[in-house]
Image (tube, rainbow, N blue to C red; front, top):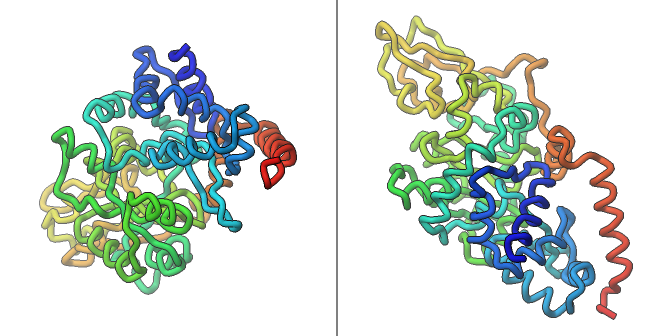
Length: 378
């Protein structure tokens, strides 16, 4: 019975836009068993991507509202589901995907056993073909790489995105944390990932992160640039987080790095150009590039554009100003969804896991269940 519950949960997660593919080894089930109790897994089966109050989920699960609320609060604290503070002041809960989702919810409480299983599963989970069609993350160039003559939209500038936020938090990077625990870490800063809005509110409420000001967040971005970290955020114009990523620890960058043409897999409006005549071959850019897009040959830097993801790290520290960030031709500009919900809808349609009919059915079911459970629980 217990094994069947975890298989049901795995199947439900695999129906979400990013999927949760099965493996011959069953590592995906081992991950679920380490994170979800049987009771957690059973209740998670009654959650959807639509945030709902405990009374609605209790009705669907056939349990008392008080019991549902207590269990949902505990699962939210564990990072397994997402609890969102509604305008009325109540918490609404929804299911989370694996990445970006309940894996990141395990920051500061990772076990070595869980990390080993994650590392085994990562190659199966990250579908390069799907990522090429609809990336979940997008690359933002570091601010120091953007010249005054470069036309940059508000959602393409990390600093502008930060200045638009009212609730901000900084969290430990789960990628560098898990690599450090198993002895493969680097010396890059660990407390370096930013969250905003409802994500920041949840992080602060659960003491997973600490509240910071806009000025502190911008300083973290500056330190990330100095450390040679790639700035990534959700593939939407309205964002909930900014990650500062290194190619040695970040699960996404590590996966993309294995592909011979990572440039084709990322959502980035920019590309780098190199003036080989002014390059002095110092090699700083090669050391900072997280995608191995730069090599040295005959005392000059050689740029492999099929590996360049437009992060700008080579631009900001070039002593001869030989690099320049350029906007890609209009035909090559990636479309950026307005919200993460639109991103998930598009991802679900591209993957075939959540066609429009399925999404409409989910919304209708949620609306009906809300009507069946009055606000006062009677």
